[in-house]
Length: 409
Image (cartoon, rainbow, N blue to C red; front, top):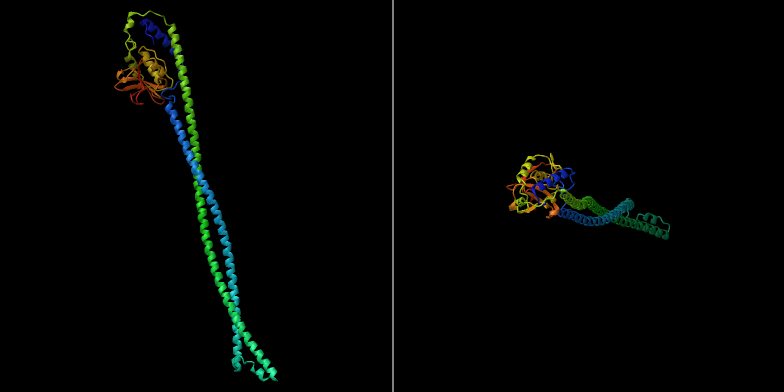
C-alpha cells in the first residue's frame, strides 16, 4: 500500500473500510476447506493407480482360478463317467456271478443225481449177489441161444458204461460250473472294489471342484469390491483436480478484483505531495503509525468465537477474516484473502517475527497457493481461526507444520 501523508492515509483507510464493509464475503478456500494442492492431487492419483494395480492382480488370480475351475469341471465329469461305467460293470459282474452260481447249483444237482443213479445200480447188483457188471447175468442164462446171450451181455455192458459216463460227465460239469462260479464271484468282488475306488475318486473330484468354485466366488466378490473402490478413487482424483482448477481460477479472479478495488480506491483518494513526516515510515516498508499490539489485543478478544467459512466478524471468523479485522484495528487494511494478505505485506524471516506478524501455509510452497494465515503472538504461539467445528484459539506455531511464509502488514 503506497505511503502518503498521515491525513491522506487516514482518508484512504476510511474509504477502504467503507468499501470492504459493503462487500460480500468471497467464496474462496480457507483452512476449513482449502483448495487441493498438487500433493493432494498426486496422492489421489497414486491411490487410484494403486487400486487399479490391485484390480489387475485380482483379475489375474480370478482368470487362473476360473481356468482351474474349468479343468476340475472336466475332471469331475470324467470321474462321474468312470463311476457310471464301473457301476454298470459291477452290475453285469454281479449278474454273471449270480447266473454262474445257479449253473453251478444245477450242475451239482445233476452230479448228485448221476451219483444216486450209479449207487442204485450198484445196490441192485449187490442185492442180486453178482459182481458189478453181471446184474444182467440172469438174462444171459435165460437166453434161448448164444446170440441172445451175447446181446444181453452187450446191453448190460452198455448200461454200465453209460452210467459211468453220465457220472463222469456230471462230475466234470459240476467242477467246471463251480470254478466258473468262483471266478464270477471274484470278478464281481473286483468290480465292486473298482466301483468303490472310482466313487471315491468321483467324490474327491467333486469336492475339489466345489472348493475351487468357492475360491472363484470369493475372488469374484473381491474383484467387484475393488472395482467399486477404484471407481470411487478415480472420482476423488477427478474431483480434486476440478476443485483445484476452480480454486486457482477463483483465487486469480479474486486477486484481479482486489487489485481493481485498490486501484479504484487509490484513484478516489486525494493526492498530496510527500511531506517531511513521511520519513517516519519504517525502513522495512511498514507504517510506523500501525499498532501491532492493537491487532494482538483484538485477536485475543475473539478467542472462543466460532469459525464460519467466509466470515469476518463480529461474532464469527475464518482465518483471513480474523487477521483482516485484527490489522484493521491496528490501522492497516488487508484483503479478505490469505494469499493477498501476504502479497500486501512485507516478507520476513522466522527470526524477525514479532507479535502481530502474520504466518502463512501453502499447499505447494508458492505464494499463490497459500491457504491458511494466523497471527503471531510470540514464543512460537499463534492465534488462528482453524476450521469448521472449532473456535478462535491459541495454538503452536508448528501445529500445521513449518509455516511457508512470514510477513508484516
